[in-house]
Every structure is written in C-alpha cells, then in structure tokens.
Image (tube, rainbow, N blue to C red; front, side, top):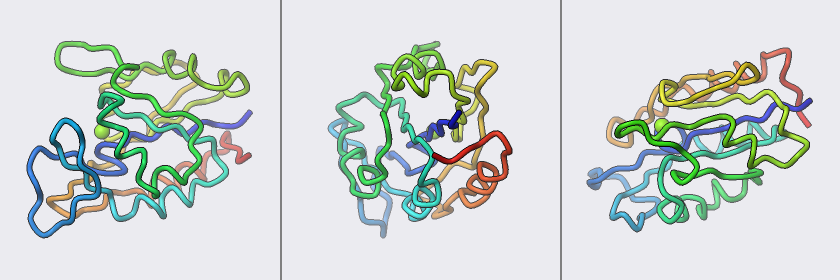
Length: 165
Ligand SMILES: [Mg+2]
C-alpha cells in the first residue's frame, strides 16, 4: 500500500506575507493582496519525493491558492490533489486539517493508505491511526532560512512502511 505524502504550502514550500520582503522578488501575488515567496529548496525537495503520491494542502481559500498552484515548481510535481481552506474546519481562528476530509478526496486506491503530513503547524491537524505528522521548522522569506526539508526527506525515505510507487 503506497504512503500518501501531504505537504503544507505555507511554512513548508513557501511563505505568505502581508508585506513585501525587502530584496526578495515576489513569486506570486495572491488575490487577497498578500505576497507568496517560494522556499528556494522547494523544487529539489519535491523532486526528491518523486514516486510518492503527493497531496498539497493549504488553509488558504482556493482562489488565493491558485497563483501558487500555477507556479511551475508546484504545478509540475504532478500532485494527485490539492486541498484548500474550504476543506478545513474552523476552530476559533484556526483552520484545522482533518485527515478524513482528505481521504474522501483521494482516488479510491489511496483511501486506506498511511498518510504522512509534512507541516510546520502540527497542532492544527487531526489525524487518525493510519496517519503521522512530520513537523518541520517554518520557512520564513524574511529570515531566509530554508527549513529542514533535507531532514524531512531522509525521515520519509527511512520509514520501513513507506513504499514508492
Ligand atoms: Mg503551515
């Protein structure tokens, strides 16, 4: 049974900001008026996960995610589905990602798979017994850190229950 890798966009693959970051070119403008900066390591990270069924998930509304989704570095990964803010539930101010909402949207052959979330905010994810969360440091376009994505790839590849397609 293949493992589905679910990757958070904001804080992992990039950084959504209300204000422009000095000396950084903007990768996408969102309809909300916010700026998206791609993590410079995002492409190599995604390339190293080639062969895994990939899902992207953001708490942004679909319309705001679209310019991000259309960036070649994201679009060309061949991800199987993308979930948005509309697929989250709200708890106070916080959008919560629920694994059962994800399973409903997966192609039938993946619905019983182990799900591995890669997210910088694991506290906002509701998992089930067949899902795990790998937490990574938040990527910040301001600070220029590019998170610990290398370590995440090693963790995914090191799991005995993870099988590439
Ligand atoms: Mg995040």
